[in-house]
Length: 162
Image (cartoon, rainbow, N blue to C red; front, top):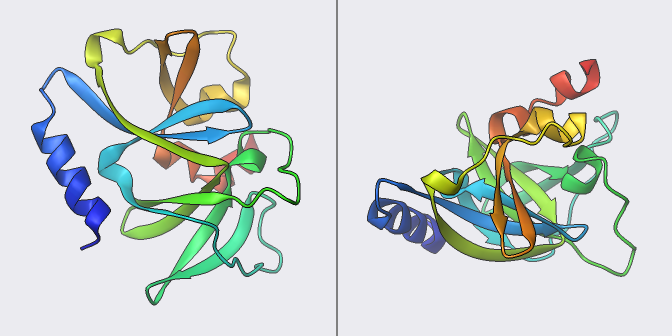
């Protein structure tokens, strides 16, 4: 078990029942949140091997302690501009149905415990693509924290059909 897994379990277990815990990440100046129970690890820049004929959102694969992990480019998946070549991306590794996925982001944020009562449904003005892969938002001191729904985010077949 990685150190982050132990922290995740302890953080989630110690959070009051009326709070939700997220790992935050930055992608193109937008703050996103991933439920902490899905997060396995946070990685610095990694060597990613391209996968021929993969969907454009799939950056490739990386080796994480002997396991092959599919790397998803969040900028492409969320319809955001590409990262400039001199900015190395970081990754948050999530577990989905027993498989590991690396979500490539610009920067890792912090672990935030937020009141469930402040969670808001998705605004109708949110981009339709974002509507499909998010569960809601938090308004934080002039910033919007968009909560990613991992299952929908990783459903690349659905993304092609939409």
